[in-house]
Image 1: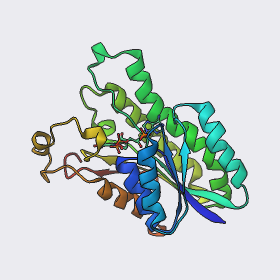
Image 2: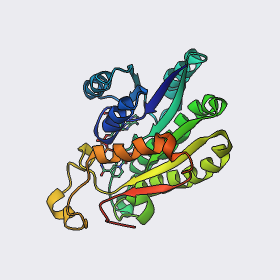
Image 3: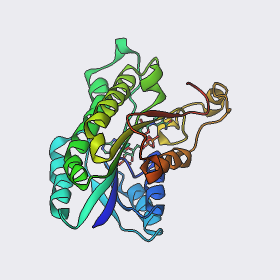
Length: 244
Ligand code: NAP
Protein backbone atom coordinates (compact mmCIF):
# COMPACT_ATOMS: atom_id res chain seq x y z
CA UNK A 1 0.00 0.00 0.00
CA UNK A 2 1.47 3.37 -1.03
CA UNK A 3 1.63 5.89 1.78
CA UNK A 4 0.73 9.50 1.07
CA UNK A 5 0.83 12.75 3.00
CA UNK A 6 -1.67 15.47 2.05
CA UNK A 7 -0.65 19.04 2.81
CA UNK A 8 -3.26 21.74 2.23
CA UNK A 9 -1.74 25.02 1.07
CA UNK A 10 1.39 23.17 0.03
CA UNK A 11 2.35 25.49 -2.81
CA UNK A 12 4.16 28.12 -0.77
CA UNK A 13 5.64 29.12 2.59
CA UNK A 14 5.26 26.78 5.54
CA UNK A 15 3.21 24.27 3.52
CA UNK A 16 5.94 23.91 0.92
CA UNK A 17 8.59 23.16 3.53
CA UNK A 18 6.27 20.63 5.18
CA UNK A 19 5.83 18.89 1.81
CA UNK A 20 9.59 18.74 1.35
CA UNK A 21 10.20 17.43 4.88
CA UNK A 22 7.54 14.73 4.55
CA UNK A 23 8.93 13.70 1.17
CA UNK A 24 12.37 13.36 2.78
CA UNK A 25 10.77 10.92 5.23
CA UNK A 26 9.62 8.77 2.30
CA UNK A 27 5.99 9.84 1.99
CA UNK A 28 4.46 10.39 -1.43
CA UNK A 29 3.02 13.89 -1.37
CA UNK A 30 -0.32 15.36 -2.35
CA UNK A 31 0.21 19.09 -2.73
CA UNK A 32 -3.03 21.02 -2.40
CA UNK A 33 -3.21 24.64 -3.48
CA UNK A 34 -5.90 27.16 -4.37
CA UNK A 35 -4.62 28.90 -7.50
CA UNK A 36 -0.87 29.39 -7.60
CA UNK A 37 0.12 26.56 -9.91
CA UNK A 38 3.57 27.98 -10.68
CA UNK A 39 4.56 27.82 -7.01
CA UNK A 40 2.89 24.44 -6.56
CA UNK A 41 5.07 23.04 -9.36
CA UNK A 42 8.20 24.30 -7.59
CA UNK A 43 7.11 22.39 -4.47
CA UNK A 44 6.34 19.34 -6.58
CA UNK A 45 9.80 19.31 -8.14
CA UNK A 46 11.50 19.72 -4.75
CA UNK A 47 9.55 16.72 -3.40
CA UNK A 48 10.28 14.58 -6.45
CA UNK A 49 13.99 15.22 -5.88
CA UNK A 50 13.53 13.04 -2.78
CA UNK A 51 12.51 10.13 -5.03
CA UNK A 52 8.83 10.08 -4.15
CA UNK A 53 5.68 10.78 -6.12
CA UNK A 54 4.28 14.29 -5.79
CA UNK A 55 0.84 15.07 -7.17
CA UNK A 56 -0.85 18.44 -7.42
CA UNK A 57 -4.41 18.56 -6.07
CA UNK A 58 -6.02 21.89 -6.82
CA UNK A 59 -9.07 22.67 -4.71
CA UNK A 60 -10.34 25.45 -2.48
CA UNK A 61 -10.43 24.05 1.07
CA UNK A 62 -13.37 26.34 1.80
CA UNK A 63 -15.45 24.77 -0.98
CA UNK A 64 -17.08 21.51 0.04
CA UNK A 65 -18.13 20.60 -3.51
CA UNK A 66 -14.62 21.07 -4.90
CA UNK A 67 -13.17 18.93 -2.10
CA UNK A 68 -15.67 16.19 -2.83
CA UNK A 69 -14.94 16.33 -6.55
CA UNK A 70 -11.14 16.36 -6.34
CA UNK A 71 -10.09 14.87 -3.00
CA UNK A 72 -13.13 12.63 -2.54
CA UNK A 73 -12.52 11.19 -6.01
CA UNK A 74 -8.82 10.62 -5.21
CA UNK A 75 -9.68 8.74 -2.02
CA UNK A 76 -12.27 6.62 -3.83
CA UNK A 77 -9.90 5.75 -6.67
CA UNK A 78 -7.05 4.96 -4.26
CA UNK A 79 -9.07 2.51 -2.18
CA UNK A 80 -6.86 -0.58 -1.84
CA UNK A 81 -3.63 0.72 -3.39
CA UNK A 82 -2.93 3.90 -1.48
CA UNK A 83 -3.64 5.54 1.84
CA UNK A 84 -3.39 9.09 3.08
CA UNK A 85 -1.57 8.38 6.32
CA UNK A 86 -0.64 11.99 7.12
CA UNK A 87 -2.88 15.04 6.81
CA UNK A 88 -1.55 18.53 7.47
CA UNK A 89 -4.30 21.16 7.54
CA UNK A 90 -2.08 24.12 6.72
CA UNK A 91 -4.04 26.31 4.26
CA UNK A 92 -4.86 29.65 5.83
CA UNK A 93 -5.32 33.33 5.07
CA UNK A 94 -5.29 36.62 6.97
CA UNK A 95 -7.78 39.44 6.48
CA UNK A 96 -6.82 41.80 9.30
CA UNK A 97 -8.91 44.73 10.48
CA UNK A 98 -10.53 45.92 13.69
CA UNK A 99 -13.83 44.21 14.44
CA UNK A 100 -15.81 47.46 14.09
CA UNK A 101 -14.74 47.65 10.46
CA UNK A 102 -14.82 43.94 9.64
CA UNK A 103 -17.02 42.96 6.70
CA UNK A 104 -18.95 39.69 6.48
CA UNK A 105 -16.56 38.68 3.73
CA UNK A 106 -13.48 39.27 5.89
CA UNK A 107 -14.99 37.23 8.72
CA UNK A 108 -16.30 34.40 6.54
CA UNK A 109 -13.31 33.94 4.26
CA UNK A 110 -10.87 33.51 7.16
CA UNK A 111 -13.17 31.15 9.12
CA UNK A 112 -14.08 29.20 5.99
CA UNK A 113 -10.47 28.66 4.94
CA UNK A 114 -9.02 27.58 8.28
CA UNK A 115 -11.88 26.12 10.31
CA UNK A 116 -14.36 24.88 7.72
CA UNK A 117 -11.48 23.78 5.51
CA UNK A 118 -10.08 21.64 8.29
CA UNK A 119 -13.50 20.05 8.84
CA UNK A 120 -14.26 19.33 5.17
CA UNK A 121 -10.80 17.95 4.35
CA UNK A 122 -10.41 15.89 7.52
CA UNK A 123 -13.83 14.31 7.11
CA UNK A 124 -12.95 13.27 3.58
CA UNK A 125 -9.76 11.41 4.53
CA UNK A 126 -10.49 10.17 8.06
CA UNK A 127 -12.29 6.86 7.54
CA UNK A 128 -9.55 5.11 5.53
CA UNK A 129 -7.05 6.38 8.13
CA UNK A 130 -9.11 4.82 10.92
CA UNK A 131 -9.38 1.54 9.03
CA UNK A 132 -5.60 1.66 8.52
CA UNK A 133 -5.26 1.88 12.32
CA UNK A 134 -2.49 4.44 11.96
CA UNK A 135 -2.56 8.08 11.05
CA UNK A 136 -1.29 11.53 11.81
CA UNK A 137 -3.32 14.73 11.61
CA UNK A 138 -1.57 18.03 12.21
CA UNK A 139 -3.43 21.31 12.24
CA UNK A 140 -1.40 24.45 11.68
CA UNK A 141 -2.90 27.04 14.00
CA UNK A 142 -1.28 30.19 15.38
CA UNK A 143 -0.19 32.13 18.41
CA UNK A 144 -3.26 34.26 17.60
CA UNK A 145 -5.52 31.31 18.40
CA UNK A 146 -3.93 30.94 21.84
CA UNK A 147 -3.40 34.53 22.89
CA UNK A 148 -5.83 36.43 20.65
CA UNK A 149 -4.43 39.28 18.56
CA UNK A 150 -6.06 42.69 18.12
CA UNK A 151 -6.95 43.31 14.49
CA UNK A 152 -7.31 39.55 14.01
CA UNK A 153 -10.61 38.66 15.67
CA UNK A 154 -11.56 36.54 12.63
CA UNK A 155 -8.17 34.80 12.41
CA UNK A 156 -7.91 34.29 16.19
CA UNK A 157 -11.41 32.77 16.25
CA UNK A 158 -10.64 30.48 13.32
CA UNK A 159 -7.41 29.21 14.88
CA UNK A 160 -8.92 28.86 18.37
CA UNK A 161 -11.73 26.85 16.77
CA UNK A 162 -9.17 24.56 15.18
CA UNK A 163 -7.51 24.07 18.57
CA UNK A 164 -10.82 22.95 20.14
CA UNK A 165 -11.44 20.61 17.23
CA UNK A 166 -7.92 19.17 17.56
CA UNK A 167 -8.46 18.31 21.21
CA UNK A 168 -11.90 16.75 20.61
CA UNK A 169 -10.94 14.73 17.53
CA UNK A 170 -7.79 13.45 19.25
CA UNK A 171 -10.01 11.73 21.83
CA UNK A 172 -12.35 10.32 19.18
CA UNK A 173 -9.61 8.56 17.22
CA UNK A 174 -6.86 7.74 19.73
CA UNK A 175 -7.82 4.07 19.99
CA UNK A 176 -7.03 3.64 16.29
CA UNK A 177 -3.49 5.02 16.67
CA UNK A 178 -4.42 8.20 14.88
CA UNK A 179 -2.89 11.20 16.62
CA UNK A 180 -4.23 14.73 16.19
CA UNK A 181 -2.09 17.69 17.21
CA UNK A 182 -1.87 21.40 16.52
CA UNK A 183 1.27 23.39 15.79
CA UNK A 184 1.07 27.07 16.75
CA UNK A 185 3.71 29.23 15.05
CA UNK A 186 4.52 32.79 16.08
CA UNK A 187 6.05 35.03 13.40
CA UNK A 188 7.40 32.97 10.50
CA UNK A 189 8.91 34.51 7.35
CA UNK A 190 6.59 33.82 4.40
CA UNK A 191 4.30 35.61 1.94
CA UNK A 192 1.75 35.86 4.77
CA UNK A 193 4.07 38.02 6.85
CA UNK A 194 5.77 39.85 3.95
CA UNK A 195 3.79 43.05 4.67
CA UNK A 196 4.91 43.16 8.33
CA UNK A 197 7.87 45.15 9.63
CA UNK A 198 10.10 42.17 10.41
CA UNK A 199 12.86 44.22 12.01
CA UNK A 200 10.51 46.04 14.36
CA UNK A 201 8.45 42.98 15.31
CA UNK A 202 11.57 40.87 15.89
CA UNK A 203 12.29 43.08 18.88
CA UNK A 204 9.23 41.57 20.58
CA UNK A 205 10.60 38.05 20.13
CA UNK A 206 13.04 36.81 22.80
CA UNK A 207 15.08 35.16 20.02
CA UNK A 208 15.09 38.49 18.14
CA UNK A 209 14.12 36.98 14.81
CA UNK A 210 11.24 35.51 12.82
CA UNK A 211 11.14 31.73 12.50
CA UNK A 212 11.78 29.90 9.25
CA UNK A 213 9.23 27.68 7.49
CA UNK A 214 11.81 24.86 7.67
CA UNK A 215 11.74 25.08 11.47
CA UNK A 216 7.97 24.55 11.52
CA UNK A 217 8.38 21.68 9.06
CA UNK A 218 10.94 20.01 11.34
CA UNK A 219 8.39 19.97 14.18
CA UNK A 220 5.76 18.50 11.87
CA UNK A 221 8.31 15.89 10.81
CA UNK A 222 8.73 14.83 14.43
CA UNK A 223 4.98 14.72 15.09
CA UNK A 224 4.38 12.36 12.16
CA UNK A 225 7.15 10.01 13.28
CA UNK A 226 6.62 6.80 15.25
CA UNK A 227 8.58 8.45 18.09
CA UNK A 228 5.64 10.82 18.61
CA UNK A 229 3.11 7.99 19.01
CA UNK A 230 1.98 9.00 22.53
CA UNK A 231 1.58 12.72 21.80
CA UNK A 232 -2.00 13.60 20.91
CA UNK A 233 -4.49 16.41 21.50
CA UNK A 234 -1.66 18.87 22.09
CA UNK A 235 -0.93 22.37 20.88
CA UNK A 236 2.80 22.83 20.38
CA UNK A 237 4.04 26.38 20.06
CA UNK A 238 6.99 27.36 17.90
CA UNK A 239 7.54 31.06 18.42
CA UNK A 240 11.07 31.88 19.61
CA UNK A 241 9.83 32.36 23.16
CA UNK A 242 7.25 35.01 22.26
CA UNK A 243 4.41 33.40 24.23
CA UNK A 244 4.09 30.41 26.53
P1 NAP B 1 1.31 31.71 2.77
O1 NAP B 1 2.76 31.83 2.48
O2 NAP B 1 0.42 32.88 2.54
O3 NAP B 1 0.73 30.45 1.96
C1 NAP B 1 -0.63 30.13 2.08
C2 NAP B 1 -0.89 28.79 1.42
O4 NAP B 1 -2.26 28.45 1.64
C3 NAP B 1 -0.68 28.81 -0.06
O5 NAP B 1 -0.18 27.54 -0.44
C4 NAP B 1 -2.10 29.00 -0.61
O6 NAP B 1 -2.29 28.47 -1.92
C5 NAP B 1 -2.88 28.20 0.39
N1 NAP B 1 -4.29 28.57 0.47
C6 NAP B 1 -4.83 29.76 0.88
N2 NAP B 1 -6.17 29.70 0.81
C7 NAP B 1 -6.48 28.46 0.35
C8 NAP B 1 -7.69 27.79 0.05
N3 NAP B 1 -8.88 28.39 0.23
N4 NAP B 1 -7.63 26.52 -0.43
C9 NAP B 1 -6.44 25.89 -0.61
N5 NAP B 1 -5.27 26.48 -0.34
C10 NAP B 1 -5.29 27.74 0.14
O7 NAP B 1 1.08 31.32 4.29
P2 NAP B 1 2.08 30.66 5.38
O8 NAP B 1 2.74 31.75 6.13
O9 NAP B 1 2.89 29.59 4.76
O10 NAP B 1 0.99 30.03 6.36
C11 NAP B 1 0.66 28.64 6.39
C12 NAP B 1 -0.20 28.37 7.60
O11 NAP B 1 0.52 28.76 8.79
C13 NAP B 1 -1.51 29.17 7.64
O12 NAP B 1 -2.54 28.38 8.16
C14 NAP B 1 -1.20 30.31 8.59
O13 NAP B 1 -2.38 30.79 9.20
C15 NAP B 1 -0.29 29.61 9.56
N6 NAP B 1 0.57 30.53 10.31
C16 NAP B 1 1.49 31.31 9.68
C17 NAP B 1 2.28 32.18 10.42
C18 NAP B 1 3.32 33.06 9.80
O14 NAP B 1 3.89 33.90 10.53
N7 NAP B 1 3.62 32.93 8.50
C19 NAP B 1 2.12 32.24 11.81
C20 NAP B 1 1.18 31.44 12.41
C21 NAP B 1 0.42 30.57 11.66
P3 NAP B 1 -1.99 29.34 -3.27
O15 NAP B 1 -0.49 29.39 -3.38
O16 NAP B 1 -2.62 28.57 -4.38
O17 NAP B 1 -2.58 30.70 -3.05
